[in-house]
Length: 77
Image (cartoon, rainbow, N blue to C red; front, top):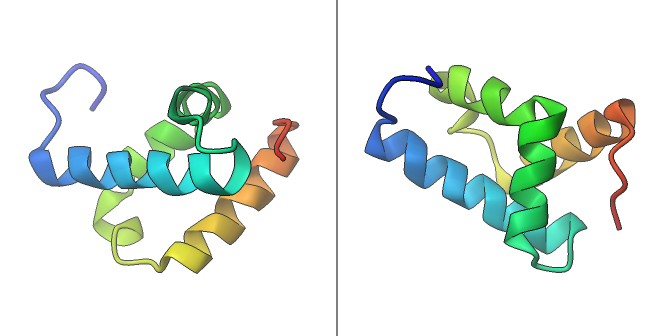
């Protein structure tokens, strides 16, 4: 999926993921949120599982992101 043109729905979803991640963990720093999503591997997971994850609630995703970041050793606020 990385080399293919990203579908607009997936792109909008990933922008939303960046926004909620930056607000929850990185004091609204979207660049830091994006970098940590990419470097941890969570970015690719969410793109590749869009059909499932796009229907999950914000609260569920925040919990999942927190657990994943903790597992990967990502420094979160």
